[in-house]
Length: 112
Ligand SMILES: [Zn+2]
Image (cartoon, rainbow, N blue to C red):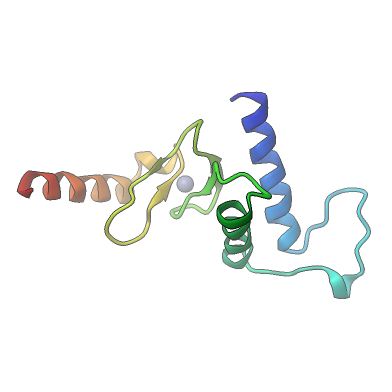
């Protein structure tokens, strides 16, 4: 993984944790001001920032099978058709969900 991509993923993971109520070391945030989003809500914020305002990279995706973040230029895959899941980390690309979805696409291609 390149340093830039490594940093993108690390910073996005820090933000992901922060939005769920885990402040980075050295930050003191009053409990009433600390966000406490669910993992899905936290990911929605990151997706929004990445896609609309570019304040965070949009090269980091969240696997919709296991929920982990990954750098899309370093691994994982996006099968952008049909129903979710769309994003798969390297690990989940070896799973049944990925195989089922990839087969759907091949079946669609065959009938095209
Ligand atoms: Zn995964």
